[in-house]
Length: 178
Picture (tube, helix red, strand yellow):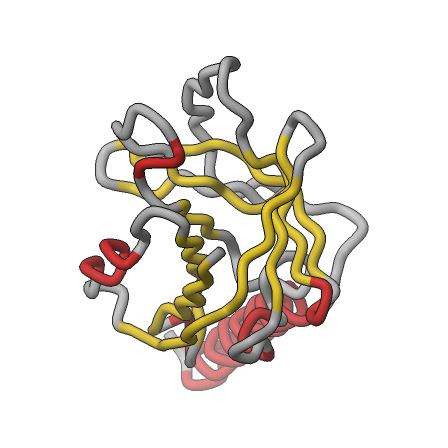
């Protein structure tokens, strides 16, 4: 391989890498008219007898997103690009344990969650039309391996979880109580 062809190959690879990096950067900060679902979501069984949350509203951050029931599958968090996911557990009812909601930190989803402040309100709207209001009590950044933070979701607690930091190397956790 000649020096010129090696230089051309390196130049093409650099251009392709920069183009892809630019797309990823735009995807995070700009809302696109299409919102692809990157990971297949597993819909959990929701018992119809009890009301369940269908919308997450954080007025101060202009966040209004549909809530899609989901679960862990093969130790992977099933996630959607069309809203936020509600982690379904083996708990018999949602009242016995707090709620864990997670989603992408894209601009069109939870991208502005890092701007939330303690004392701000989060509302969950239920399938029967009722709404429950939570107040943010704490905001923390943890490592992705710190899953014990999910244990903070006790009764009457809402935990909102998303990626943050350089290349999504950390997790942003917002804890709110009724």
